[in-house]
Length: 351
Image (cartoon, rainbow, N blue to C red; front, side, top):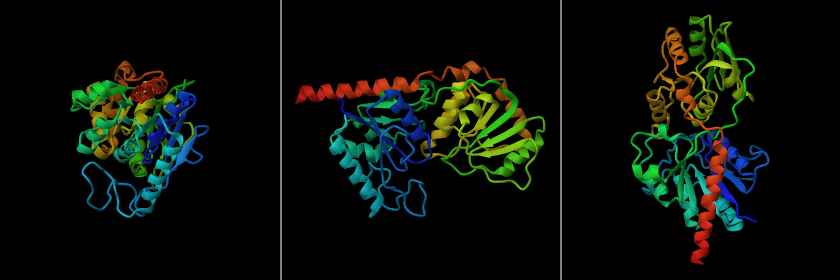
């Protein structure tokens, strides 16, 4: 029986888990997800649930409140959760003897895997991730996996990193075929990784454009008064269907939403959210440069949404459609297996 592939899943937002699940299911078997908060959230894919490493009361802003070695991003001192998660990962590695660990994402986990004698593939996200810890994780990895089209890569990415990167756009659920597109519906998508949307903003936008129907999915505060052409749906189980049937989509530049917009070739107004390493800003800039989205760096006045929506409707659907792939998860899964097989052959030759 082939040795398993471990897949570390970062617990900020939900895009890492969704991407890992898509790849694991495409692989068919042999992939184990490793991360915090995975219990009962991976279906039939095996998982190892880790203790939380966040500082109680501080959320997760990447701050560990102390000095750290220059090759680490997050290393709080005297944190029981960190101690137990390191022990659990090391224990699983010793027992399962994985052929490979995919790290999505954590320079500390990449270092731990290598210290435990396991080859790694590091998932490269958008943004200016060229600091010393990232470079070290890239250098130590057997390959880099970018879950986006090469045209969306940051302009500042060094050629050496590009050459080491396997680009796999389209690692999303299969596009939903909409029975009917509601052209007057403007869908606002709010993700898990940021602050809840301000309901007053979307109530004002809806009131200023009575001929449009607004729908907000994801966390959103309740406004004092909700116009008749605005729906606040909260968390939904059919986000893909709602994206497929909407006339226009508004949202941030997270991997999950951008991947879904690309898959469904939707007119897109992108409002990038603040993220470490300019992740969403970098992606939004590339989308704008490619004519694939209308980008607004901050929320405009209520009356200006109509102009932005009209501009988005005027974009060429091919400009965004060409950034996708119909079988991204399958492509990524096959590549990971090839990397795992190659590292196994190298170990056999050196034994």
